[in-house]
Amino acid sequence: MIKKSEVFSDQRLTGFGIIPRGSQALDKQLFFFHTLYKLICHYDMLLRPIKMVVQVCERRVQGVYELIILGLLMRWPAHGYRIAHIINDMIGPYAKLSNGRLYPLLAKLEAEGLIVACVSVESEGTSGEAKGERQLRTYEITDDGRERFHRLMMDTTSNPGEYQKLFLQKAPLLYALKPAERLHLIDHYINYCQAHVLHLTAEAEDLASRDDTYMSQPQLEAILDVMQHKAVEWRLELDWVKSLHEKELAQAQVQN
Image 1 (cartoon, rainbow, N blue to C red):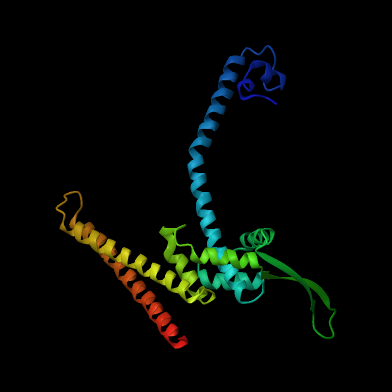
Image 2: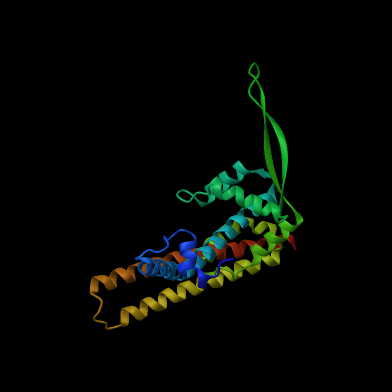
């Protein structure tokens, strides 16, 4: 194995035929390769934090898709086309889950023992035509998959910045939890919405009361308008989740 310290020695470079023996430009070419190597290493160091952020974002997106897939299979078995169709209806119209992302994720879930694929044979063609057969893979959730689904549903700390989007995917799946667990998630999201309303309201009041000269009046008004708009959105979100809370309490009273 070649050590890094040996990569740019004249013996190594001439030995591999990169630089001919006896070349008068040996020193210049060695300097060029050495500088190029340092730039590549430096570039890799600069990219490393970006790669880490991309990997974290990818894991978060994959976690959302994993929750949706397991949630769908909690209700009924489904094949890949149906899973993709339902997911794209949920996240559309512009975001799309491609087959290039879906089927590797299904394979990963299957390898982890969270789902199992059942292969069936389906006839193609109509009467009077030549009939063929195709294999159809239908996915079912396993006991480990149900446990994983429960952990994902009850997790409220992994992605706080994007929890609004995540809760919108959890809301249709609350039926699969116990009443106390449903109330726990709903109460948590009520607090989450209230925190956003209080933050935006306080920040808007603070910004409006400042006597800063770096911002023109039109700029200030535009920023305050956006903040007020977001506060209205979060109040609507708060009203909605409070209605979920009331429905849960009414359902609990009926059952009792």
